[in-house]
Length: 426
Image (cartoon, rainbow, N blue to C red; front, top):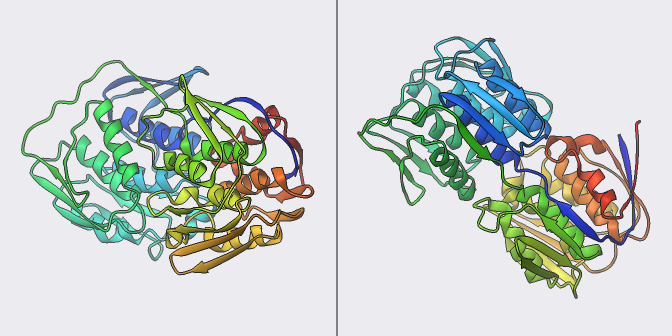
């Protein structure tokens, strides 16, 4: 699909999408919960659909009723030997340890850029947990056979926190006792906070956390509550970040459905919006954001690397050179996002310098009409679309359907705010 975004002034109210980080974790916890979980306001992204498919293959019964999804589970009892996590990095890293609770042999795979991402940490850790594993040189597909036996292990958290999320859920479901997960150089700590929050909400066993370096499961038995359970998915700060930047660039809008007390890492977009000089207010749970005298800012995105694309779109309109730390976290995303952002925004006339872990964005000089490609990266497509709002002409985005991975209603929402959006198939 090709999207053409015309320069536009926007206004109005918009409800942010639901968090796929929260939704996918809720799906996993619902699979491990003995009883029926009703998920209110569920996410509808491709990653969310992949999570629902995985848990159904692992034995859960999923009934979609529109505004709610009911998930009935008696624990893991796989009904298929093939699991496909789609293009979800969280899905593959979280569900693989959970699936390994089963004693049945399973093949776990994905699609798109996920098949190229390194997965060698499974080869290293799984044998220590009595799990048989075979990969394609540290990449998908994975052939595994459990059951997982919780043991004291050490994992590298420098690439992603998502594998740790899967281990924490699997260890909790297995009633791990007297074992510790040691973690070296953990990144994206707020995502682990979200995992622990979901575990607590479902009444699952929670480890004692020591400086995010040791996750200690004590010697006590834990009886997880069973029966009916209700869970409400919160708004997605990753997706909402693009709406906040759109408002800062192009008009006063009100963003509804966001939790001010969220532990999601990408809530830090509020700091960038404020530091850049945009208008921002919170009244009765509704955020109002609008343009101001935008100026360059400094931001550390090490713990929230998914913010790089909207941050670059914002920085492009800020007078001066914006410095963003954490660029080394971008190598193994849907694309190499540092190079992709440099390429895409370069075509729109924005200079981006990469200096090891630093990204420097030269902004405030205007954006040009351009034809760009999303590199099949949902966040690149959304960043280009938002940046187009103040360009000197239309911006055309090829492979624009990449947004379905996380925010399928993105172009619809831009239209609701008054953006000129034209969509056509190849």
